[in-house]
Image 1 (cartoon, rainbow, N blue to C red):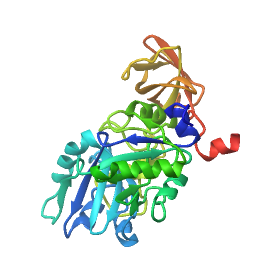
Image 2 (image 1 turned 90 degrees about the vertical axis):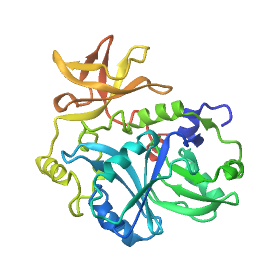
Image 3 (image 1 turned 180 degrees about the horizontal axis):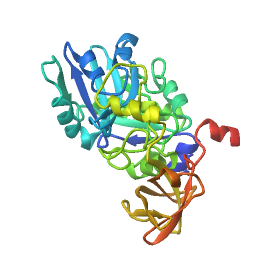
Image 4 (image 1 turned 180 degrees about the vertical axis):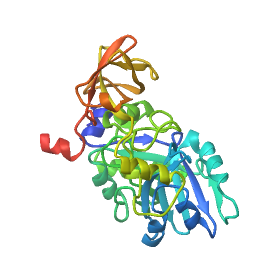
Length: 335
């Protein structure tokens, strides 16, 4: 594995990423935290509360119009709820939530810079983590407080490559011991990846990102975020719109994969044209080792079928099914 690039390493086994500058964390505390947070986000916070420490889910914070303010990885840890999201967006998310605290006993605190954050992603990530962790690894979207390499860690089971993935939070002084333990469990030094590597992996997997595919102009069904919506909970901000869209059964635009025709990667934001009119725009682009130039973008529903041809300034593209590459068990079945 030492000779593999990071993309190959993740798709075949695993790589380690420094996520400290990429991912942020909000702590939610106070006597009213469960009731209040359950009324703010699409995840079932009451279920997390009853499930005990370490329970987690993927959710979205919406506007009153049902559009996406932020996507969140939510965890109950003891008497605190954690909201994990893009670090640069944390102040904006706190501001949006703070406006909704009226007479509630709730406090929000930005804890983004408190810990080092390592991302372990890849087909073999769970086996490697199990070999280093004192105890079981968390199930998808769940979290666990444990010990790794003699250090206290908080591990959340989510990521962006489409493979098994874990976010490991630890004290900065414990980083050498934790990385050494993960390398030992892998049997050799894990490749270290950069944010640019993870971005290519994310686009290959078709995972939408806050600030690119997700913003206050996008509705959850447009981004294919059905898994972020708990359909059997009480009211929350934007819930009426989400329910109306679900009963109607369709939205006007959809997130799609785009196989770009040409050797160059175009700029994000370019308009996409079909049938002589604008149908959407490019939101993320990447040069994939396996698939060449690829992109994510939004197109009108009538142009979202795989095989549809679209054009942009300087090139053409074909709509393809996501993900671009086989992931996890799909790869195992094809080899």
